[in-house]
Image (cartoon, rainbow, N blue to C red; front, top):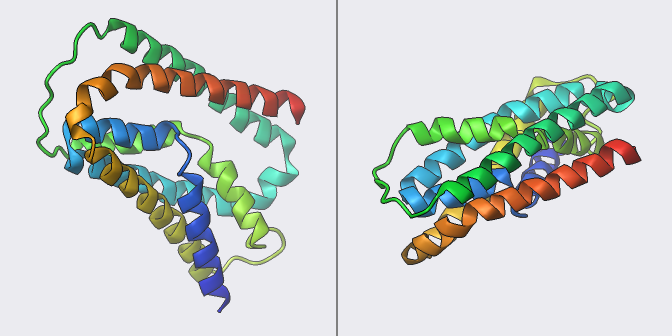
Length: 207
């Protein structure tokens, strides 16, 4: 009963946590529109694989991260640097794209590695899953059981993939509007990175 509760809560928390537009889900949507549905699914799979390990790190470090402000600040500062770099990258890419190129929509396994890379750059899932683990009382003084840990990381990964697949399905429907989406997606990603930079700065100085 306890295992079922942990799995369901973690699954729906992960599912809802990826719903707001972010680096990973917008990359999935962008890939789906530009390169086709199958490549979008591959990116989602790659991202979900990394989430599996991010959730594992989170559940192992729950108590340590909460009890150590230095580690928490290091994570936030790392995220800040990454978001600033990505903001500049997407802005420069948007400025340099004078025309829309025709891309092959053949399914490519490289999309899996693309999803993994984007997910690695996104450091927010670790503190997110740390908070979930703490709320479930999985961490702290409770001794970990491998079954609980496995259910937690599986639920996190599957919940993430469910939402990312929804993005694939949704943006695949607007395939005929590829030109419009591609033209403005890089500006949107740059703006999103700016918002994440501001949020991270507030978290660093406020906490």
